[in-house]
Amino acid sequence: MNEQNSGCIGKVLKSTRNHYLVKTDLAVLKCIVRGRVAGGTATELSAVKVGDDVRVQPLSATEGAIQKILPRRSKLSRAVEGKAYREHIIATNIDQMIIIMSTQQPEFKSGLLDRYLVIAEKNSLKSVICLNKIDLVDQSIFQETARWYDKLDYPFHYTSALTGEGMKEFRNFLIGKVSVLVGHSGVGKSSMIQKIEPTVKLKVADISQKTQKGKHSTSYVELFPLSFGGYLIDTPGIRELGLWDIFRNELKRYFKEFCKFEPDCQFNDCLHLKEPGCAVKRAVDKAKISSERYKNYYNIYLDLRAAPYELIKRR
Ligand code: GDP
Ligand code: ZN
Image (cartoon, rainbow, N blue to C red; front, side, top):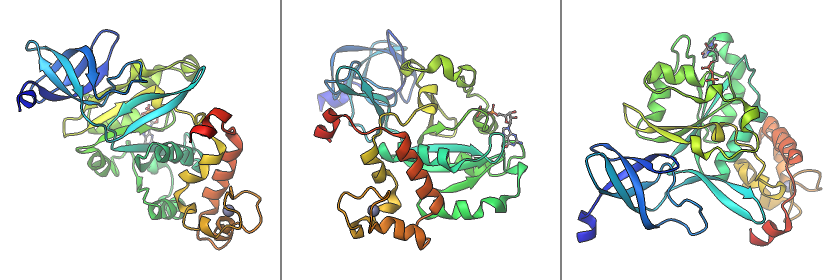
């Protein structure tokens, strides 16, 4: 009882070298961590992550100390390759991934969309697809594509930051949720956010992919509170999140439509590539699985590596 009353609950918006910014109901506090924080995992270099709900002991009107990390309901992470594989948590308590694609400039590519969906599935995040710049083409071109994704419970939504079409629905998707926004440069992410929340400035567009390569970009992760409720995570680290920590054998798990057919494959460990008696391929032939999605599975598979021995043992 005492412990319950000794602090308040807040959300970590940002982590810097020296402190964390924590938003409570009343204020945004500059927080330090006192001692070992309960709830963090021992393997993490820095236990407190952006997105964490934490219990804070206020020290003044503007400062506090983080006492405890409340249980996480989700996380976005990747494996860091060093002497041994280590999990690197990018952000926690994310409700959904909003994948922004554009019809043109840059052109819609389902392969890229499926790569994002694989990352979302790996991290057990729900996804919403927004196809922006719908003002540039006839919407009916995408009818078939949209039908497949909708059927897989990936809502496929059309927007135009230019004309405002679909922007109200886009805003509705974000209300009350913690969303991570992904999508290639130029698809219109900044324009869309500007339209619904002019105070949030995405800062990432200027950081070139080149300078990001090979660097850990955690320091950029930031949670933006939205005036209508909810938060937006925007970071180059997430935007350019690769698939490099996903290995060939696990990929099929992230194409969720495969699992219904898989038990009928001739081989238990069928990878649905060139094996005989593959029920997934039969389902593709019968148009029960999108041939486009299957093609993307095949191509992504070829891009990936086999898991190193160390990981095969652990997984
Ligand atoms: P970001 O890199 O994803 O943040 O993309 P930006 O928001 O910077 O947009 C890239 C370019 O696309 C800019 O020139 C925008 O004006 C343009 N743009 C954004 N949304 C739309 C749209 O819905 N329709 C059209 N025609 N252009 C758009
Ligand atoms: Zn198979």
